[in-house]
Length: 123
Length: 108
Image (cartoon, rainbow over all chains, first blue to last red; front, side, top):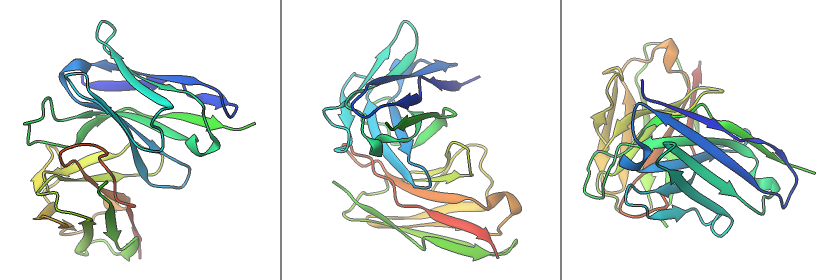
């Protein structure tokens, strides 16, 4: 079964760091584009970051310079390292698999999602 | 960056109604437009990709159309399980792959 399971969320003070993990099963994380998407309480979805199958990484302006997306192929796991956390980073964080495996794929969209992990930034 | 807007932000409808949600991009995105459904406390679910292609397992009452800057999600006959929030997302060329602000569909 194709599945994503996130972990690592929790309560953290402003300025602190947290690393989210997203363990994949049923497919290989390095074969697809993989993204992080977050949702603040009562708000809409916000795209956060993507790592391409080739390893290129991109970030939303709101997290650039503070968050780092990576993957461990041996563990088939996606990560999001979050530093210098702010109150406005409080959200449910989802990892998601993109249908694309390369730039020329025309079948877009995130078709597999994790259950989400909650990050609360507060003193 | 490409900005996405949706209208309406919310709507009330009855079971059996035909529902249409629109999404507009701030510049042409060809057909790189995806639609998601999200129910409270749950992860989003991909409904439509490439503007009009139905994701596997999604009921045929859902359809998408449009290209360039203007897109539409249509539910031909609203079912009880369709009451949810709906988001469009552009995936054109390079990131950020922005989402629209969402449309909440609730029971009239």
